[in-house]
Length: 289
Image (tube, rainbow, N blue to C red; front, side, top):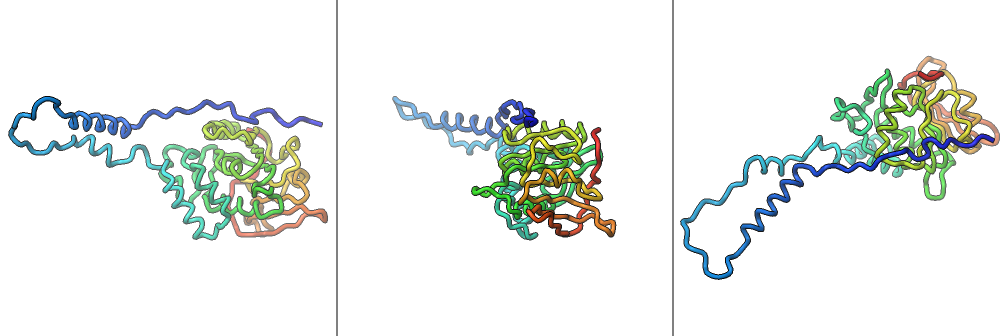
């Protein structure tokens, strides 16, 4: 029997140490100034001096205090607004919504596009690939959780993700699952995902470089399989590696030539398929590049 991969069961990550923001520095300076004004002469009353108008703080200091630093995307309120929109759109799975409120999507998109990170839109991530819009990601994760593969604590068991991309969905899965294997066929995206996920230090997340159409037999069986690319049919390897009682969620080309979400459940009697709404994903391809 082949052993499961040792890389990267826990990514070799360094601890980030963010530098103090300008606002923190200004706050300390102002506190020091107030302490000086509050000192009292111990011996004699202070001399009478002509009254002066109150001192006005420098405009620069006032501006730093009034305007938040950075792009404002680290604020939990930004993610909360996205989650409220998802709820309005019919996504009601509390575990999915909690993960999407926790994981910072702007960390997974290019710097030129961060201001669109929490809009309900797909965005390019390089090499002809995209990060799916939040509604589609949440919908597919909720469908995966509706299968009969949850642990008593409400988490998914072992999950295989086909198409790591920038790593955003892998991060969500790591927060919702016991163990995640995520495979990417494009080395450039595989390396980008490793960098994007570095800050999470997710010990239950295994990032793999390889042909996703072959799945990953060493980690099987999987309670759930989710794909971020649409093919003409479900590869036999995926069905073989799916546990009995497990669920697969993937875009697939229909007989009419359109992509739609497919939910496949593997039962003791065989596989059951359910077609859902139309979607648009990048095509599923074999091999590595």
